[in-house]
Image 1 (tube, rainbow, N blue to C red):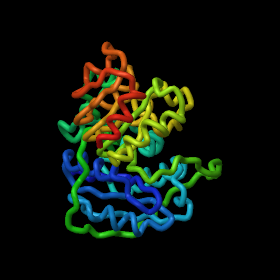
Image 2 (image 1 turned 135 degrees about the vertical axis):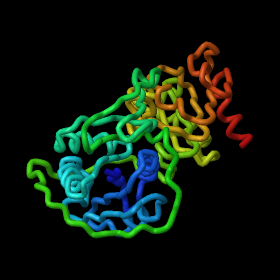
Image 3 (image 1 turned 45 degrees about the vertical axis):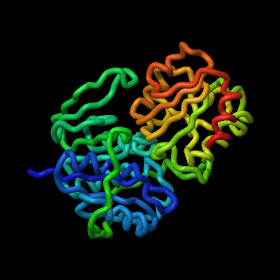
Image 4 (image 1 turned 90 degrees about the horizontal axis):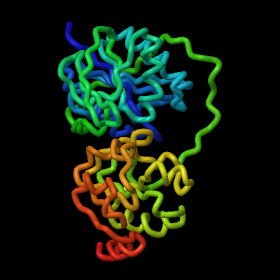
Length: 314
């Protein structure tokens, strides 16, 4: 039997997240027919974007009033029901906050274990995934069907544009929960690129000493580079910036072309989130800081002096 791969689309504000295109690439490596499922109140715009990704056989547009706000308790029963009705051999989602929230519920409803954070595909049921904060790579093999897996976004390029696939409006027969309701969302809105998909990222650590210094020193450099802004866990725990800016094992795993680590010592937890970056630039006053062991370029000195000088030269 050929593989039938169901990719759960991540989207917000009527826009498809690039993370979905990376999950499609993982599906291409598995091989088989790829379907993208768009769950929304009105998913026409998102479905249209998804249909343009190369390698996609069709897009399943599941419109339901309950899908207006993405809640895992509401989405998971629909994903599981759709996977069953479509005869899906694989259910994939990006290894983002969205995928990590939805797919474990889907796996439980389907009665199968989840394969988390796949970073390489050896066969339809055999994958590589990181462990021990990315310091070891394990190969896992599953014998169950369907295979439910989150995709490590830093390990796959986004699928390119291709011929438009057909969009099918689809109804899903699933019992939605009554114990969960949407109350609201608090999020940090910014015109900057999304942290997980940005090509350039400037991150600050505890050495910044305050949120005001993030604004004074990190923001101007990021503005000059057109970069997203991140932070170490220490900076987030200290209250300098919101936790949605945290980069690392318990934050966001990223793979930008250029990564600035400013005042970040380089704890294992942080390195696990940036090791796939193409070029890493470290600025730290401690020449023995672990961050310099993986940095491609390093500046040893006081960030409060170096950053304004560097920003001024850009």
